[in-house]
Image (tube, rainbow, N blue to C red; front, side, top):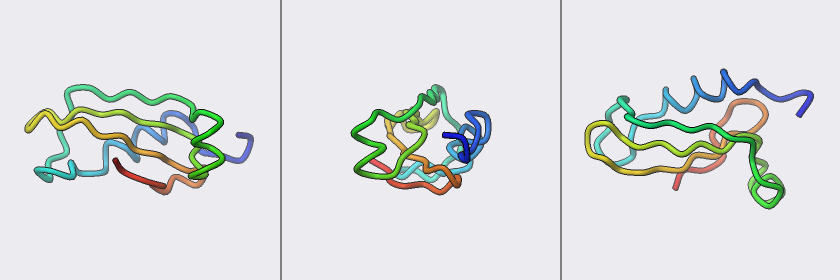
Length: 74
């Protein structure tokens, strides 16, 4: 993780991604954790984000790679 983005930058990337359901940017809960070994290998993910939309309540998972790009949204 030496050449990857910081946790703070990963949080900004996650907050700048709109809800897949309603398109809003307001989240009532946002958690950023280092990626698991399996997600790191499969998706190239460095940070794993779980967020809950503050408008519609949809729970989403985001994978963020070392360059700050979104690897996947679920």
